[in-house]
Length: 446
Ligand code: PA5
Image: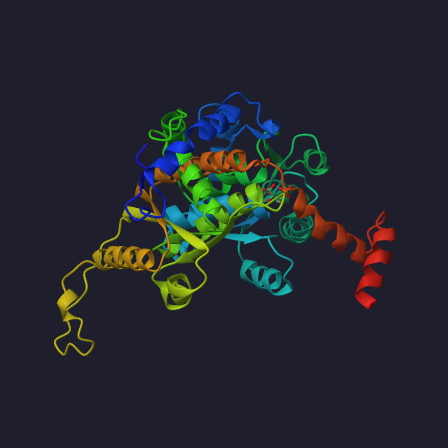
């Protein structure tokens, strides 16, 4: 595994001995995962996924992606939360946040069903006009409101455009094998279906068909992605925090939380990390924000956000620490031109690579934030290849599980997500929610 964790900007906020004191607890957390005895052990499927996945289904994923690439201008990926964030993060990280605008021989990819916005839906429908479309609806439960509404809309669009038979070739359904009605309905309708493993929860599912089909459609090598995750799985097979950087990251987060650092900010210096940060926020937020515990996961993209949130991070409440993802080689090169008039006074950097300036901004910010009392963990990544991303995904998933066990929560459930749904169903008049509706309306009218 090429990922490394640097503590250069963490000392003196966390002393070496503070990490060492945590080793016995880290060993227990590691054992809870490895022995399968920890809370939420029915959702440990992601642990061995990089080496133990359904090879036949993998072939079907590749075949489906080839078909979509051949017959579609646009792939609409319908899903919310763990059912879309990983794929979107991977496409933006490995390809580009401007993926749809790039010259390419793969379809444009749009994400729908991750909000209830009329504007977003109608704009996407108008983008789809006159284009050949396929859809991949992804919902483990098959009953989540946001993607279910979008699926209704795009399913009828496809049936209208291609007829019942033609639509069958263009609708790909990723769902649970038994629960809910989506699988049964899709089998009956003749849509190609893919199964989300029972023991992998939504936010840990990017390396299943949930993430892999859209990622493959973007022309990303999914074998390499899995190989990177397998490298990380191998490298993280030790309870020693000196040798296991993901376990060490979990330990450091825990130490910082005990010191009153209640917010962790994930920092990227590249716009292609924006959706990766969204994926990370869901992973860490849903896994540890429960029982009134957990760090609040926030994110920024620098240097952009140095001009918005930089002031707060430098001098606001001292309750945060930063985790910086530094990508050594972003793959692109650009040299800053000379300006004979030197209007901006910047000729001292003309001839230098833009990435050198970006990396210097990073070092300058690390030093400044340290001076402002903000501890910084730096995670170094070799490049933005599929393999490196596979490593990073597994690194964060592993560290997230360890963080949950260190904190004393179940990192694999999300009971709090139901609260808004129940209220929304009651207020919308769903049968069975009549009493709650009366109670809520009385509160609203008060
Ligand atoms: O991580 C999770 O479990 C959630 O974010 C789910 O992925 C999300 O709520 C969507 O659920 P479903 O795939 O059942 O539609």
